[in-house]
View 1 (spheres, one colour):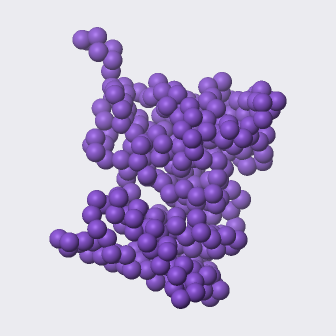
View 2: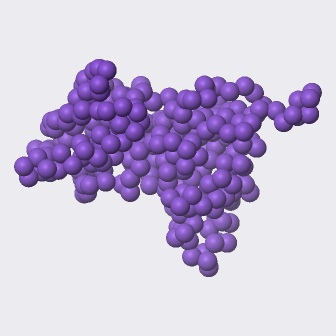
Length: 302
């Protein structure tokens, strides 16, 4: 409370960390109320840390969505895991997001060790997501295992895709934020550039429609961006690692690429609030996931 008896404003940073495909990005988008981070059912969809800003009565929280911690086998994978580790520096709360329907595994133990090493003493909340898939007889066993692993009794069972208990989790996080002034303007909801987000929206549509090795081998580089009074013209190159993948993404008569472009354009227009002409090309770039130069150009690096 301030001198006038009014509740003080709370503002701070909170990091979401967990394995790939546990629902971190879905949670982020739900709490921010805007699409900040792309989502798919493919592991390792998020490739760099993303900040999403949640504004509400008396609070502002800058959420940091991190790439899923996994066994890194490429330079891209190593960069992703390092982004997750670095995000734990100078934050006000850690939200460990787990698949509550399953018992903790080796990667969960690795994440707990990362939190202990990089955010010792930082308040933490356990978010046991996918509660809709959790069997009743496993609830107590899994709760006990995860709370012991992450060293906290503060937890919430959620089903982020359905919005179940997301508001209750948000309330718990607000309570951990320090008193302070807003860090972002009220109309800001992310630190990502429109250019980067447009590329990610194209990649999201590819992830939704492809399988096997293709999702991990795809990146999108925005080459050109021209605004005119009537519309925004965006040119982007989709990188793949094999000629066979290029054939898949183009599709028979170019139909697959056309479908991806149409769906991505709809999302980009919603983000920008104006008409968009989206031009896509597919290029084979062998081994791009091992190239520091290309990772830097894609904004996955530094």
